[in-house]
Image 1 (cartoon, rainbow, N blue to C red):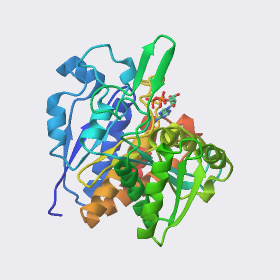
Image 2: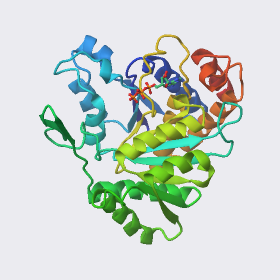
Image 3: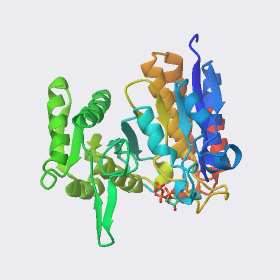
Length: 356
Ligand code: ATP
């Protein structure tokens, strides 16, 4: 393979220090198998970076990210950061600066791990940069404010471009899968905001005649996601609905340890990022489920392999997925959150064994 990939490693906080190294080790083993040339670049971020470099997102980390093909970002526990100008939440900056407008979050059943059904295979595509999230929907200032002690206002930002971008990413995914796209909204109440999102989803349908499209109101969708998740393929929605629904979806298939994700944008770079937070309650115990991070990393390489047209990288991603599936079938290896008797180390060993 002639093309070298440059991939960053940003461990994040808490269980990030346990599951990101596993994901990297698994990716390295798969890369070796298919002779994929990867330069790995560890970069400081998060609480440890504040202690060692004086900033949770040091300028050098940000500059280096601009030179990479993609990176693996571990979960960030920003709520526990001390107050201070240098102790910022890096998420909004990363997603905004690299225009990572779509957060792709798959949900999939595996046997015996405590899934509510055995036939779930869906992807929620969450708009990533606007909506209700006040930490990222403004250039300057904050969209939540309190004019007096009695009143708080939270504003949602919906744009045509943001809606179109995330919808297009979802249509493209649907085209590669079962060709069914559901857009989720509440335009019955949010006639302008959700209305604009729906208009943009509908407009694009003409470009994807092969994709069957339907729409579901968000509260009905929350119910149907529990009752008949097998009927959904790709689902696209606005930021906060997507945040909530993807955690609900994870609950169907064993919980947050089974919830990977990939942030994608207009083609430049990708960021592997699991759906869950930094899980401080289990950090340091060696019991975190590494699946979410390994699978997010696999998604990163699958995306890079396809977009850069490097078959070895696609094959490498497939090897990662086969190995994870095998490890998940071993109750002695897999972690306790998914009906296993093992821990982070046994599960990692099982995935690595399956690759070799
Ligand atoms: P955030 O708001 O930052 O997403 P959160 O408040 O949703 O975070 P998490 O850190 O995601 O909280 O944790 C929620 C629960 O899921 C915790 O009990 C945690 O231990 C569990 N959890 C999260 N990730 C994993 C994992 N990889 N393996 C096992 N359990 C996990």
